[in-house]
Every structure is written in C-alpha cells, then in structure tokens.
Image (tube, rainbow, N blue to C red; front, side, top):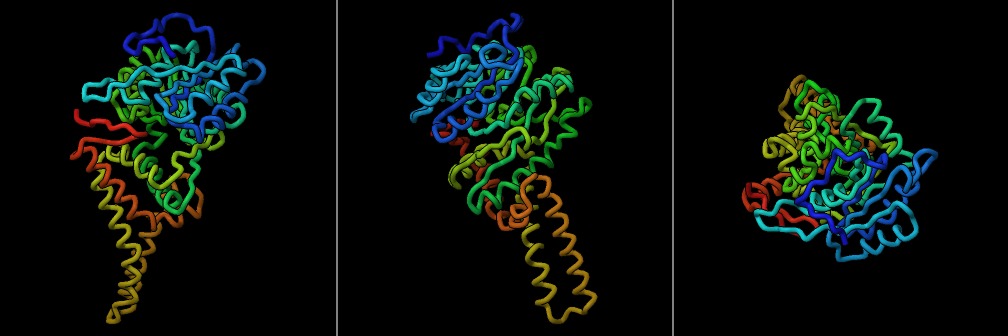
Length: 363
C-alpha cells in the first residue's frame, strides 16, 4: 500500500538517482497489463538497465480484477519494479482528482527518475523505444515528448469509426503547430507522455489538472504555457495500443472525450452529415434525375469527385490503413452519434461514466 499523500508535493529540487521512472496507472487492466509490462521490462540495454538506470512503477487504481496480482508477480521477479495502490478517490463534485490523475500523481510522488514516462496499460512498446525517446527529447530540448501510437482495432465499427476520430484529432491538433514554440496550441497523448521531472512538478503535475478528463492535453498546455518546449508526433515504430476491446467500450470511451476534444462538436457533426449526404446523394441525383442535361449531370459528378477527394484526403490524416480509410464513410452515422452523445453527457446530464465510475462534469 502506498504511504504517499497526493496532497503533498515531493521536493522536486532533489537530485533524482535514476534516469527514468515509467509509471503505469492501471484500473481493471488484467487483459492488457501483462503484455504491456513484458514489453517495457524487455527495454533494458547496455547503459539503460532496469533497477540501475530506470524503474517501473505500476499504480493500482482500486482494481476489482487481477490487475494488482499481475503487477505484483512481475515485481517479485524483477528488481526495479514497484507496485503502489492509489489513495481512495473522492468522487464528489468537490473531489480533486479523476481516477487516472490520482494514480498518475501517486506514481509521480514515488518516482526517482529525472524523466517521468506515463504510459497506459493497454500499450505495447517496441524494443528500445523508451531509451530512443529519451534521446529524442534531449535532441529536441523537449521538456515534454508525447507519441501517438499505432492503433489496433477490431470489429467493423472500430475499423470504420476510429479513422474518422483520429483524422479530426490530426486536424484540430496538427503536430507541426503543436511543436511550434510560437503557437499557443498544445497537445499530448497520455498513452505515451514523457516529461522532465522539473517541468512536471513546476506546473503542479497531475495534481494541477486533477479534475480534467483530458489530463494529457491539460498538462501539455501548462508546460507549454511555462515557455518550455513540447514535442508531439505519430510514432508507429515506437508503440501500439488497443484502446477498446468491444464496441460498448469504444462508445463509453469516446463519450467521455469527444465533446471536449473538439472545439465545436455539434458543427463537426453537421459537417459530417453533409459529407454523407453528398457522398451518396450526388450520384443518385446525377443518374436519377432523368431530365438533366449531360453537362448538368457532369457538373454534379465533378462535385461528387471533389467531395470524395476532400473527404478521403482528410481521413488519410488518421494514419490508419487504406481499407479502414475506404470504409470510414460508413462509420459517419456512428461518429455523429458519438459526438452528440458526448455533448449531451457533458453539457446537459453533466455526468460521464468511465471504468465503472461516475464523474460530475459541472464546473
């Protein structure tokens, strides 16, 4: 059981005795945690040895499955692995944390690394990607480095809908603008978020963004606002993730996030509905309206071709496979549903559900 108090900030000015602390917040992750830990524990290389140069901290967030047992088994056979329990969570409107920020803050307090890497339990890390990320952060003088992983999807609706969501994320948070110090735009992905210890504690870490559902973006905003450099990019060579195992999980997860990820979610929903209508309506009009002159039919078909080009060039930003991009038009109704459902939960019901907990979204 962790004996750290999330209300007390450690002395971040103390010289850390390790290069890196990898922190995994985990709630009911028995399906994914073992593979995630195995991919991280295999990262050791000359000059980057577990227990000597870096550590792995798993923070159990009040799991009701075998998450803690899996973590403890790894800790019993690997030096440098620590398992903690997050303190009890206050779910009242005045509570200062969500489950994830509470777990991340607990891990950060116990961490001994000069860098802190927060990564989700559903990620799989490629060989030596963590040591390479440290060198990348140093090369770019980045106080925060975040990767967007390759997404592993299953089932028709994930293949059709996820490219739409990630293409919109790429449009709203273009990495070139995020990485530009002259721009105020900031973004990060909590699936892989590497941050300098001093930078993290100087802005209050996860405690300062404790109630935020988008804690990764909020933390990046705080660090960039402090005139520090952040770097964000798509990194399929570094890691992959399976965010959702079922369609129901996907619905719950994106309901939590979409309304606050996108600045105008209702307008976005309407634009995607227009895409759908033009995509299927223009060919019907061109060939179904028998009184049209040939030149009129050709104009309609040219507009249709432009519609296809605009839609698919946008979805191509998602970095998904060509087959997934091709069928994404069929996922538009589901995407619109998720957008409007998220808006309803955030703006009207003021309650979102995530991993078995109800969070109040009222200011």
